[in-house]
Image (tube, rainbow, N blue to C red; front, side):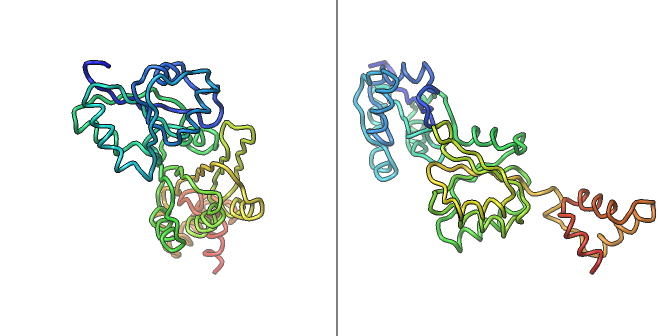
Length: 279
């Protein structure tokens, strides 16, 4: 036991044990208490890493998080080192952890991390979509009505979006995203990252929704969706679009090229500008 307790957040492998850091191994072996989202998965991970967990193992998951947090904070206050590990990735990112971190900080206990893999940044990097600015949205609401409402609220978000989704809801979620964002919005469905059957499907939302409905993908799913074009939140009226096309035609561009240029400028689909001009 050290003079002051300490909470250590452990970044666990998403699927491939070889991604575990040396520090993860050290902390698992040395911590006084290891709080695990799934104790059975922790046991398998320790076996795969050839590590003996030296301290007491306790469960810490959504169902007991509220009740167990004060118990762990008291252990930390007594001077013990507590390590927190989830099924994969970093604690607190759509996984248990926030309550314990907040409780430890409020109690004056130091909090640090042995960082590791994250499904959010891994999927973002693999998606082929812009990654300089992005927004993690977590899970969309479970009910269709609430989900569609949230999608409408996100439609004008210009940053790349990263979401988690359950396999049995992914087809419906993609259909709602295609309807709310437009079927042409680029996206990538990342499934079973770092595992044997890792798969990344990169298609526009409309095509991706149809693919998901047909293939019924299973496993851990992370969805990455391109942000809205900069002008999407303030679409110019029809007369403005017609005038912009006419101006470019007068300057010598063909109607096809003029429409393409205007669509690019305003972040619109070319066929939408074409329809407006020929209405």
